[in-house]
Length: 289
Image (cartoon, rainbow, N blue to C red; front, side, top):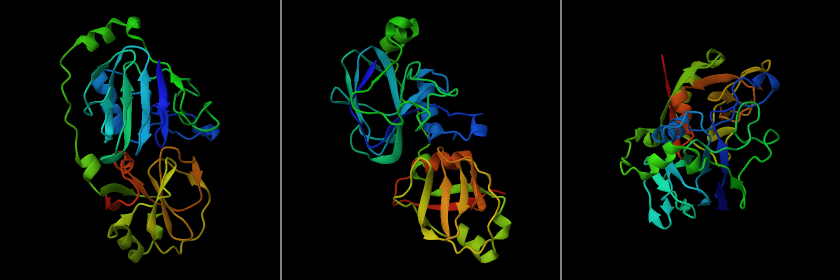
């Protein structure tokens, strides 16, 4: 078990999401940055879909009530275990009574805490991902107690906890530092005139404070003279253009359909990179042929 002593800015349980439930109007959800979450799980030998804690900008303080092993990937939040500094992308043993703290953010936006076997929370529609009105809670709260596998339940955990080969895995730092995001042309891209198309690929867009798990927005506008369209399918990574000229990049908690022109589509890698950008960051779009 893991007790939440103090919550961060926005902490949730996430896995790879509710694939196959969109016909019921349920968003896919899941981890915003699949690259970082998969890295944490792979270091522990977990399945890629094992549930993790996703934290935004500022993470929680957690007390472990059973033995396990952990790994944190993604954003750098100056981790400490019982006041001792920890590195990201490294497997560490954790004992009953240990306290893990996420501290000041120094790189990225979202961090991912994995434990051996994944967090054992409720499953709704094939996923443990928290989402309002689907799961009992949509964020973690102070005082919550989260189930995990105890070391007594598997010999593998005990073996890994006693191992001293906690080597670090090198990650691609461009995942956090690159400002260029690869995109495909969306279904309505050709409806834009050449001036609008050029502006899309030659503007450094500033990420707005209004950005969240549902969508990212920008401070700059693109003049929009497109006609309205019939509501159509959208996906995480779809870039919509509103009548007022606002660009909206849909993220993991996005709706299933939308009525705004879909002018671009981020690659999966670009969606992961976007999830690590904080408000005030600049990004540019690079077309993929």
